[in-house]
Length: 272
Image 1 (spheres, helix red, strand yellow):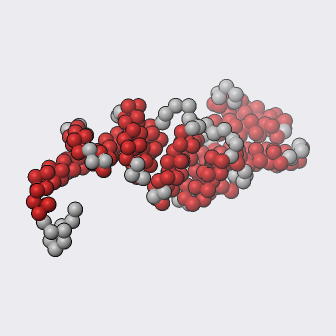
Image 2: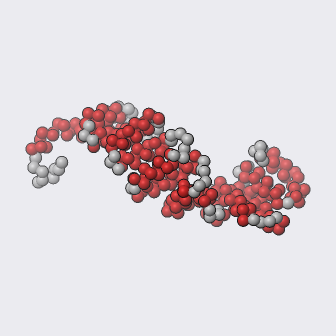
Image 3: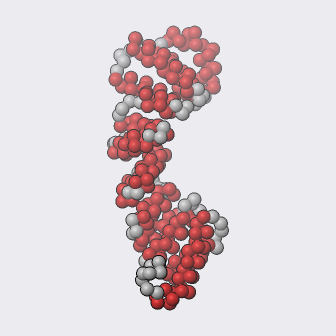
């Protein structure tokens, strides 16, 4: 098992199980690890049930032992995609908050998932970077749906602080949070930095479009036209088409600006 040679371990167990099963609880826990390594998660849980029954009879069944058994079962249930069963097995503590958050989220219970994700972030447990990214996605989903962009900015910052190097998703999300708050000067800087690090990222074209909109908001028309033109000529896609439409609007505005200034502010259905 330690060498991850699970096929060899299973062969050994099947060949010698009449002796190994008499050895005691530790055999079943080792067998559970073997079956989990083989991807046989239900069988692994059956082995954990046997281990649990023997541990109560022959060993001191401490609270820590019971928690470990519950976590092993929960991991198996999670791996096979049975998230409701995962939640049944999970102990209610900080160490299980990560798995609880993902299980709740995949069951569509977003509010419970967000609570668990917050608990996981606030716990003193050091999370692997992969788990940090999965948890922050749950929080970003909340921030975007509730349009709480100051909180989104904070969630990106605290997740980024737990990573050893810049992350593409968080780099663009951080810039988006500033843009949605209409902090256009800061958003431009954040988008530039994201594009320098991840120029071919899946959010790169959207970032370039948002940058052009920031230039317009800051009344930097020349920079906006340049950014939109580069985006329009860069290929195909929804943001390329949006850039083309924005350029047409800017051209129309320039062409008819003198006429627009002569119109009354009301009466013709035309506003600034």
